[in-house]
Length: 233
Image (tube, rainbow, N blue to C red; front, side):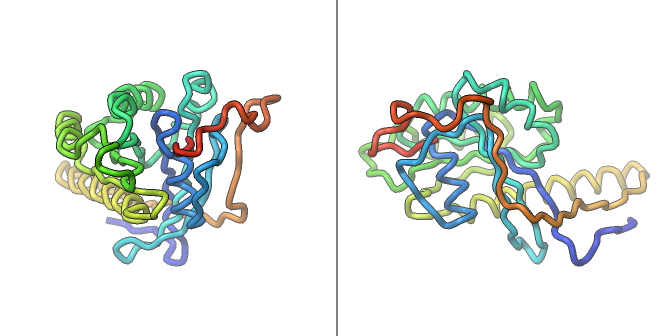
């Protein structure tokens, strides 16, 4: 196998976070990238992304993490950015059964707009708000594990952006799933007698944040903000 990976460059992976509004996608991203948590932040309009450099299993990566709006009215804004995705995080809140039930539709939407083989693509299911009291839990770990098995997803983790529990672990797990599938594909190609060239994507990014918002919408008004007791988008 010919390895043309630049030794001094990071491997660039595009990570898309999907899930219903108010499950805490922005909080998850901001906690991971900036170690910052704001329970009263605004809903995401369209999409936005942040970059984060990490090391997983002696490999250096730059994760380009895309936070998408969960509301149906923003579908036309978010779906074009599914193309080129390396990893997809499917998120739900442990205190919101409807957000869990929506995981299948989010997975289907992603596959509809980005034509990949779901059995060879790293989906990771991420439960949010794991800091909430047990009495508020509406979704059990057992039923999520069962759902993952039914959809051939091998990675599932619960997190809390508020306390930072398992946040970094979730993204490391996602990278490991991507690497595992990549190596599996390489082995299959070699078994079929094909030469494989490891052209790992590298990046040298200067700007850490870009936003893509609907023209004329600007920031949401106070009426679109979540209650203090809830996590935002």
